[in-house]
Every structure is written in C-alpha cells, then in structure tokens.
Amino acid sequence: MSLPCRIGLSVTRPSKLTVSFMTVFRYKLPPNYPSRGCVRLSWQRQSFIFSFYSTQSSSLPKEEAFRVTKISTTTGDLETVSLTPSEILHQTSILPRDLVSLALTTNRERQSRRMKTGRPSILRSNLLMESSMRQPPAAILPRKDCILLSFGSIRAVADRKFVYIFDTHKLVSQSFADQLSQLYHQRAVINNVRDEHCQQQRVLEEEENNRNDTACTKPHKVDLPIKDKTNDGRDPHMLPRNAHYNYHENDEPPELLFLEAVLADTVESSTRRIRIFEPIVDDVLNQIANDDDFSNVVLHQMAPLKDQLQSFDMFVTQAYECLTRLLNDDNEMLKLLLTEQEEARQKNTVVDFERHQHVELLLGVYAQQFRAVQHEANFLLSRIKSKQEFIELELDLYRNRLIRMNVDLAILGVSVGTTTAMAGWFGMNLVNGLESSPTAFAFVTAFSSVSAFCVALYFSRRVSGRAIQQRAKERIDKIRTMTHALSDMTALDHTVKKIVMSGQRMNREEFKRELCLARHSRHISDAEVDLLFEVLNSQDDGFLDHDDFSDQNEEDVMSGCSSR
Image 1 (cartoon, one colour):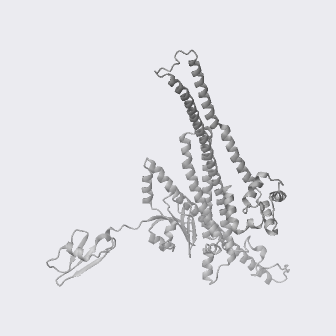
Image 2 (cartoon, helix red, strand yellow; image 1 turned 90 degrees about the vertical axis):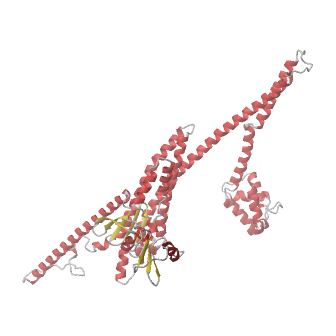
Image 3 (cartoon, one colour; image 1 turned 45 degrees about the horizontal axis):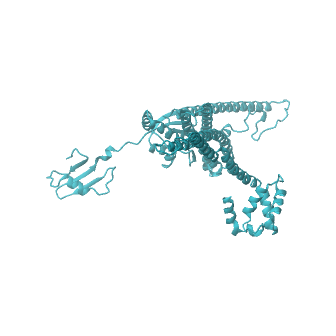
C-alpha cells in the first residue's frame, strides 16, 4: 500500500503492520540524509518487507535552459535553440568550470532582475548601478577544439564548424549574432563564386590543351614558339588571376574571423560610449561653471556620472589586459588557430611557430585601439576630478569667508561688551560719588569707547590677513626651497659621488661651488645650500666626507629629510 505523504510505504505481502510509520522513519533515515536525490531504504522482517522512497526527487528543479544562437561557419545559417548546461558541455566540448567564465543568464533571471529594477525607489538606482558594474572579466580562452570568449556583452564558444552565441535574449547579443551570420554567409557566397570561377578556368585550360595537342598532330604546320610552362605543364599566361595560390588556403580561418568580429564590435561599442559620455560630461561641467552657488542638483549629477565612467574605464582596462596577456603568450596565440591545429594533428605535425605572428598582428591592432579608448576615458575622469577639486577650493573659500565673518562678529561683540561693562558699572543703583560731577559722563564714555577700539584693534591684528599671509609666505618659501634644492638631482648625485669616490672633504662654500658647477642653471641659493648641507652633514662637524654617506648614517639622513 502507499500513503499520501512525502514518504511512500510499500509492503510486499499483506500483513498486519505492528510498527508505527514515524518510528520506522526515524529509525531508518541516517543523520546525514541528503536533502535531494532518491534514496531507497529497506527494512526486512520475517513477515513483511517495506521500502521507503524519498519523493523529493520528483520535486527536483529542472535544469535551466539558456537561449543559444548556433551559427554555421560554412554557410552562415543561424538557428536559435534552448540548451541546458549539460547539452552545452556536450555540444561545445568545454569544461564545466568554463561555464563560470561565461556567466550565463536565463530569460527568467533577466525578467526577475527587470522586476527588481522597475521599483520606483532608491533600490532601483542601486540595482542598475550594480548590474552595470557586475560585468564578468574579459576572457579569451583557447581550448583544444574551441575558443571560449567572454568579451564585453558577447558570451560565445567558437569551433571550426559552429559558433554558439549565448544570452541571445539580450538585444545586443542577438544583433551581433545576426551580423556574424551575415558575415559567414557573405564569406560562403564569395567562396562559392571563387570555386565556380576556378572550375570554369580549369575547363577552359583543358579545352585549350586539347586543341594544342590536335594542332601538333597536323602535317606542314608552322611551329609556334615554345612558351614557358609551369611545373604542371600549363601556360602561366592562361592561368586565372590569383590562380597561383589556393583561395581557401589564403582565406581567414573561421575562428579568427569570429574573433576579429567580436573585437571590432567591442571597440566600436566602446568608442560610441566615449562619444556619448563626452557631451554629458561637457554639459554637467558647464552647468557647474555657470552655477555660482553650486546647487545640490548639479553636484549630485557628478556622482553617478563618475561611477559610470569608472565602470567603463574598468571594462576597457580589463579588455586591454586580456589582449595583452594573449600577446605575451605565443603558445596561447597558436592555440587560437583551430583550423591549422586540426590539420597539423591529421598530418601528425605541429603548427609553424611563426604563425603566431598572424594572430599577434590581429590582437595588437585592437589592443592599441582599446588603449586609446582607455586614455580618453581617463581624460574625462580627470576633467571631473579637476572640477571636483575646483569646487572643493571654492567651498573652502566660501567657508573661510563665513569663518572670517564669525570672527569679525565675535570681535565686535567683545568690543561692545567692553563698553557695556563700563556702562553697567555706573548704571548700578549705588552711590559712587560721581553723580554730581559734570565731566564724569564724558570721561567714562570716551574711556569705554577707546577701550573698545583698542580691544577690537588688538584682536583684529591677531587674526588679520597680514599675519596669516606672513606665516603662509614662510611656509611657501620653505616648500619652494625644498623644491628647488631637489630639482636637479643629477647635480646633487654627481657632487656626492665626487665626495665618496675621491675621499674629499667639503665645507659649505666648496659644496655650494661644486653644486653650481654641476647644475644646468649654474645657480643655487644660500637657503638651498643650507638645507642640503644640514641634512647631509650627519656627523655635525661642518664638513661633508665619506663618513656622512656610509650605510650606518643612511637612516639619520632620511630622518633629517623627513624633519625638514
């Protein structure tokens, strides 16, 4: 019999069941019972045998099917099918771990992500940002009989006969699949025309040879001048154009045609993105330049723009590094020649090592284009960064003006407080003996006013711009001295080398003279000489010699530079 529950119970012969179901269940299932799969557990008694079956196997989810476009490299025929991961592994001969590099998505996952990003909230913008940045790294991985490629928005596996384009539920991938199909179709048409042309030429050559043989057998025939013959006896002037080589041998192999199509499409897409980013960046920066108060709306536009540019720069950098890794590995470039590798295996030979130069030329051209796109993206990022620094400087100046106004108000308050304090003393309802004095009021008023003015003048001078400028000027002079002193390191290195190699001792004046002679400008200020001499003179004896530049004094010299 069977029970309508998750565990089925079957009895081999009718018998009275003396053991409860739950008891048997707890007794028979091991502690490490798997959550999925079908497990058969049997318990045999003298009178009956019953078995338990896990019905979770019926609830196992089916394998996710991915939409794949299959393109024939011979005819360009296009077919869109749904393949499970096991079918993909079987048809493309890739390894299971290669599916991680492809990072495939199903249509259901795409719809689920679309529903999440459709929410009218901040979560939508976050999900859009994450989806744009969550791009798998660029990869071009040659395998034994195929090429695994994850480049930009293209996920594909290509062998000698077919190209499998994945994620064709995306419009970009489907559009690329159509373009690649047209490319292979045009290639097939051209090859067919060439084959027909070669066949017609061979027929004409055979007819010409037959007529020549017939003419030679006739008597009293004037001998014609002997023409140059090729190795196979044919007249080279009768050969068709380009007949000295095989068309098929000089055609681009299908795998390289596919690779070049992917690289060209990705480069064009990256260039278009740069052309889209440029007017957006110009518009935002112009709005900021024309906005005196730096409104929050304009400033907040810079954050997503910078994030998108950084994401794009990361994508282009990954693509460039992927091509660079291939260019630095000659064996990997040879493995990309699937057709020649197969021909070499059939002939029990190896592919000529120099053939990697053909692949290197192809990859090198597109690597340089990716490098140029990367430079343009970095230039746009640097423009945004410069504008951010300018905004920070403007905000600092505005903040300084507010602080200065607060300081002025505080000084004014202290000055007024001094005056009101004196007025308060005489405003008390106490007899002080000056009530009848005719000059007391004028004297107290004048004294309090002068006191307030002196207090205001004192604090104003303490926080005046002149004092701040003086201190800033001193700091700038020190920075300028350090910059000029280290501007010509070649001259300094030459002078130190002369001291160490010759064992000569130099005082301050000699050190200055040697630096002046070694410098291009022939000039060095006393402040620069004092700075360098004090730092390098680790012995504090007033002379520079070999001991000052020994290894034991290197740490002292570095500490002296840091203190300066």
